[in-house]
Length: 310
Image (cartoon, rainbow, N blue to C red; front, side, top):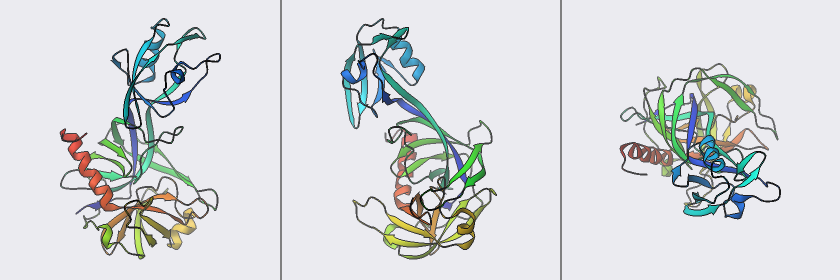
């Protein structure tokens, strides 16, 4: 039994290592590219020192005085080691890379488990804005936010929820960022909804359903939708296709907004999925993910906290 949410939540992520988001030629040479490093790779350590931020890696590289540096990094699922020789450029020694070490944003909570405190949200990973790859998570926190407005969705231009963090305080921890969403634990339930049964993918069918979501009035409401397609194939790129049918939501927002990702889908009294994406050419429709996939990922997040899985 899970509490369906639909409330917005603030996301703060710190990467595991630093992600290479851009390679730069320094007067015709890029030291990082020459030793095999690519955009999207994650640098773990330089000269045996773990790096978790831009300042750390810059300090080590500039302090090398041009001597070769040993770089340990992840490329996809592979861990690699390379020798990088910095070059002198614009007053210091550089590697020819731009890196990112953190990310922040707003999404929608899908469910809360009252027995364990675990939560699931978004229904898709948080990706780097440049590389479009999932951010490698070291640790993260959940913050309270309020929706300040939105840009309405129109054909060819999906709208977006606009919001802001209401404080710097953390109300929970994020332990997993993967293909099924963002997962961790909350200090307390974000919703006054009663817990309902989890609906498994074999129980989901085309037809009427509802979502819970929040817009600029900061009140979570129930809106009617239709599940247009259910794909049970293991290699399916998307599990569900959903269509907003609620006149109030269509009039107000034009359909699905970016930022609604994670809005829970309830059918036949069960939590069966979450909205994940909006169609650019028809923002009344979008994709969804099965709730049981998100639930399984939330179990992994609990095991990660206990040190049982990594």
